[in-house]
Length: 563
Image (cartoon, rainbow, N blue to C red):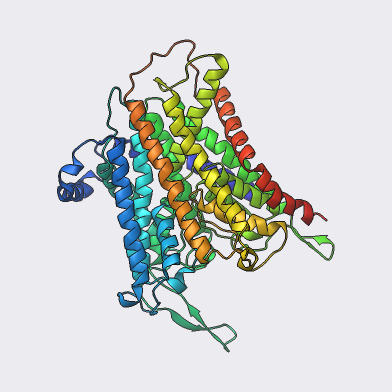
């Protein structure tokens, strides 16, 4: 247990250490300042702008920025559906994998376009190398870039005064992809490939087992390049079906640490980017601390539950719950990864979440149900947390009888309508889709294992994951049905783009306002009192939304398993 504690402390320390310079670097990109990669990528950037023409030069209002994102995403959605369905006649398909049926192709396309990366399929059995690279990896880059671009637009809303524009989507998308995601992905790809993560176009290999009597098929492919961006872009979709618990996707402790660190570093760094952009480092630190507190609590609870709530064998309680975990990773690395991946809305796994103890599974679920705000997805996590900050400011203003303000901007009814759309959309779609699924007559045929309360937990977890931009799953629920594919795909698209549009209109409304002078009565939003109030509001909304559902699932599972 002491080694686990040391590892977790080192993880948090390194995260806090590196998030600051990376955040400063991202701020320079956002602010059009020169960086050490400018000479390398500026010719490519200019070429892209020349191809785009005038659309790359004009400032956009919320309507045009939103339409640009929606049209761009729609094209990506249709292209990804098409390439999956016709992959059997396309090159780079050495295993001659057949085309994907429409419902699964739609679900997968919606998943990757929305940065969710929910996978109702096994990668090595369902998709060709070309589909994985040209389809999924491309969306891993651009969906992540879109999230950060929307965050940049919101930040401009606080910076600008008396303006009706919030930047240019094409410029933001290009800069984020070229200067942030591609360089970091290259570094991570080399790091994990050096440890044995495969990167090849060779066909699958037939190998003889150690016993010498049987042969097994070893899937291969260009995995390292996709794994790097799936983690950095908080996507999470595995190249192989077993995701990062598969040895050729995550072979050792070093690759495991690199990958789990890659999941969280950009969302953490963006907190400091936000602080620099709004000229208030204290504000950026306050957001980071609030997120970090929730993450540390989650890591601690999950680790303790997995360590001390092991199953009993012949009346003897095991030393830790190792079910569903790789021996290489153990309880410590599995708990850390589980906490990080559900906090950051990444969805990759190095152990089976379905095998976690009931309380641990509840924490994994609840982190997602809070609305992917504990660091959350790249860009989307921070603008989700800012929505909660504005709600907290509004409530605090009502309590003391003052007009609420944040970063010298008055928070008015229109702003709160957009905030409510951002906050309410994920829990509403989570609960509605879960309720619809459990009322289907054939629902019992969708389970492969487990009975009782845990079955409900599996359905709740699945739609929580899809409706909160995550992508991980409790493996006992069969997600590859026409019903779950279609409903899940629609949910993933709605929960991604409704908040995005709301955030952009919120940004425009903020940008159109003038600054309000700070006075002695202005509520401080960077001190410990406000952080405490913010955490209270977040947890109260989460509990009010999901406590009944959690009581029917993991809590009931916990109490029945104690018998």
